[in-house]
Amino acid sequence: MAFIMGWKTVYITGRRGFYDDTVKNLERSGIEFMAGYLTREDADSYELFWVPEEMSLGELKRAVGARTVLRYRLHFYQALEEFIDQVGSAELTAEDKQKIARMRLTNAA
Image 1 (cartoon, rainbow, N blue to C red):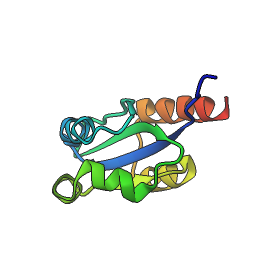
Image 2 (tube, rainbow, N blue to C red):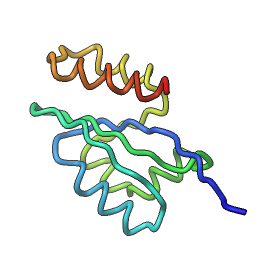
Image 3 (cartoon, one colour):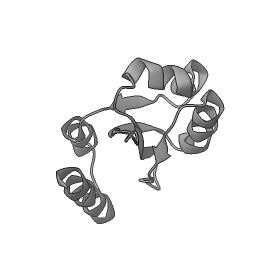
């Protein structure tokens, strides 16, 4: 009998450049994850990761590491609506709006 793992999407925002440190720490922690890519070219970055459904947000933050969370001022969102509300308060480029539309389509599937 094969075990099928379920995944959930977590959106992370923070200061530019956090992606590499975040991925390095997640790999070092040994947790299973898949990384997406949503970087903006200005002061902030937006990224998405898929983690096992049963993983709590606290476990993910511990895997990323307190130093990285604080250094890059990371914020974690489990719901697309929360993420959109956060980034919606800033001016979005046309490219950002297209990426968000693609995320909505992906989550709807």
